[in-house]
Amino acid sequence: MNELIDIEKSFYMIGTSHKKCFDCKYCRATDSQENIVSYNILPTEINKNLSNVPVAINLYYGDPMLYKKSTYNYLKQLQKTQHKGPIIIITKGSIDVSWLKDDTFIDLDLHIAFSTFGLEHEYDDFSHNMLINNLKINIPHKRSIEFRPICYKINDSEETIEGVFKIANQYGLSIGYSGLQGKSETQEYWDKNNIVLEPYPGFNFGHKKSISEKIQKNFDDFSVKYNVPIFRKTSCLISHVHNLERDYNAHYYRPNEMNCWNCVMKDKCFDYKSKLTRDKSKIEYLVPFDFDIIYKKNHQCILKTQGVCEFSTPDCSKIEGNIIKIDKVLTTADIRVIKWLTGYTVDAKFVESQYINDEWFK
Image (cartoon, rainbow, N blue to C red):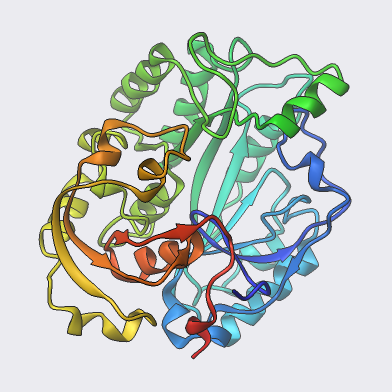
C-alpha cells in the first residue's frame, strides 16, 4: 500500500491539517490537532484515469478558508493538471472573493459547500451568520449547504430546520445533512470538556450519524414544501449538483438503505445501473487489477460476512446486479476508487485502509 495519499469515503484528499480551527465543540477532528498530516500528490500524478475523481481540499483540522493561501495553491496545482472531476471546498469561513468571484478557476468544476449549524449556539456561534453572509456574494461556482451535525434537542427544532430550508430555497441550493458522529475518542473529549451532547432515543453514538424518524420526516416534508433537494450522502449531493450521470459512490446497489426512492437522482442512478454490462473490455483500462464481472442476486457485503460491521442492514445481504469480482485482497480505498471510476460495486476481500495498492501507480 502507498501511504502518500489519502482516499476517504467520498473524496480524494489533498491538504494539510493545521493547529487552528473554529473550535466547534462537537467536532470529531479535535483529537487530531497533535497529529499533523499532509497529502500533496495530485490524482493524475498517480494515474491519468484519476483526472475525473472527486477531490476535497484541506478537509482536515483547520478550515480551508482559514488557510486561504494553501487552498488557493492546491487549486492552482489542480488547474495546471487540468483536473476534470468535482473539486470540493467545505467551509464555515468567509470566502475569499478576490479569487472566487472572478474567473480565476472557471475552468475547474469547483464546488463551495457552506456549513451551518442552523442557529447561533454556544457550541457553534458563528457558522449560520457566516452562511448568510457568504451566500450574498455572487460567485461563478457551484454551491450547496452542509447542515451538519443535527444534534438532539439543540438545532433540530422545526423552526430551525425550516429556517435553513428557506435560505436554500431563496438561493436555489441543495442541502446535505446528517446526525452527529460520536466515536469513543470524541465522546471522551466531550466528557473532558463538559460538552453535553446526547444521541437520539433508541440510538447510540458511534460511527453512524443517526437522526430520529421524526427529524427525518421534517426534512422530507420541508424538502417538498420548499422544492429543495436533500441528501444524507455527500456523494449523492455532489453528483446531483454537478449533473453527473450517477452517484459516484454507487449507493444505488442498496436503494432501500439509502432511501433512493425519494431522491432526485433516482432515475439517473437506476438507469445507469441497469445498463452496467458484463463486458469487462469496456472498463479494463480503468481497473489495475485482474477482475471479472459477474451477476449476483443476493450478494452480501464482506464486512457483514465477517461480522465486523455494527451498522449492517437487510440491504447489505441483498446487493443485486453486475458486480466486479476481484480475487486479490484490496483496501477500502481501492474499492472506493473503483466505484468512482466504473459505477460498479466490488466483490473482494478487503482491509480497512485509506491507502491504495501500488498497482494504481503502474
